[in-house]
Image (cartoon, rainbow, N blue to C red; front, side, top):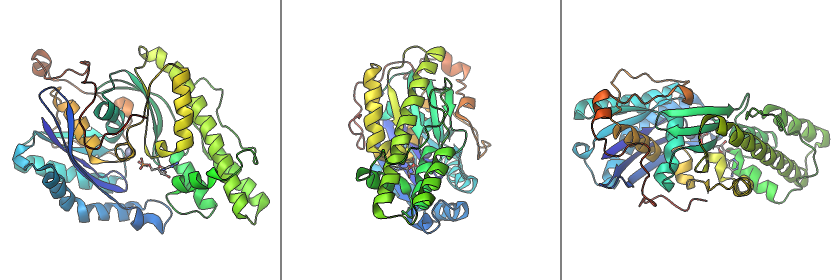
Amino acid sequence: MRVLGIESTCDETAAAVVETDENGRPHILSNAVLSQIAQHAAYGGVVPEIAARAHVEVIDHLVARALDEAGVTFDELDAVAAAAGPGLIGGVIVGLTTAKALALVTGKPFIAINHLEAHALTPRLTDSVNFPYLLLLVSGGHTQLVAVRGVGDYVRLGTTIDDAIGEAFDKTAKMLGLPYPGGPEVEKQALRGNPERFALPRPLNGRAAPDFSLSGLKTAVRVEGERVSPLSATDIADLCASFQAAVVDVIVDRTRAGLRAFREVAARPNALVVAGGVAANGAIRAALHQLATESGLKLVTPPPALCTDNGAMIAWAGLERLRLGVTDDLSAPARARWPLDSVKAEVPAEAAEAETPLPADKPLPEKPHAAAAGPGA
Ligand code: KG4
Ligand code: ZN
């Protein structure tokens, strides 16, 4: 089975071809991504209208490149999948409409993918993780703890009640005069700063519900910055180190609460998975690694190229659905909001009765041969 996946929900335009061989093993045949960071950098964040226009300009070229690099033609695809949300609606419409048009002219099935579901299923592509597992999704737009029980079977255990964690990194960076995107810059500064100089809050730590709140922390950084202003290079490094230390404590405490909440909705998790752009942060990874070890769990971190927004994760989610016989019709809407909890996979009766090629709960092979897949931690 071979699926083309298209992603355009935020500031990356991406197209990829993923196939499974006769054993159900995934292979990433191509994974073309064009980031718009340069177009948005001057504004310190993603500008929706600029994003939508930039997607329009490159998407045809990117789809052609994905097919070319994969060495396949439209005829050799089994389906076309696109992220139908959640995201910036102008961009979502660009990718979704492109995929529908391609499905229509080629006569191939069309699959509308929830972008969060694609992040959630990625560890099955990269590390063959079996259901159920706990997913911590931390990016510029999302902060969620999700019990992943099966395809179309997700329980959101916790989320942020204000800013996303990546957003908090970006806003902190902006406040301190560091360039966008702020996460990597804050991490760099934190390496040479003193994490104990500023006493910053750890919002919601100790609460049973595994939710997050970041805006108070961000405000505390601003207040401390104003107090010691004008900021020296050392002040900036110390503020970054103190901020990152607080975020690490929050993530560990909230994820521990997530592991407890997981037990209420599923059997023991097969892994703790961390995905999204913030998962690139070394301090956060190290702390989660320790938490996983303490909890007797494997920590799975898909390689950065598959952790941040990409087309392969959309194609893979499409494949997971296609092999259950779940496809969509061309009326599937673009959605700015689309909670992962509400996503279902309605397996058609005839497909459920027939032998499906690889049921969702059949263990995947040990290690996929995926070009872009790397070590799990
Ligand atoms: O997943 P992603 O590429 O895009 C979405 O937001 O969907 O995540 C980007 C976010 C940005 O907020 C960026 O500042 C953050 O991930 N990020 C980091 C690091 N690298 C990227 N945050 C903390 N430390 C990093 N090393
Ligand atoms: Zn994303």
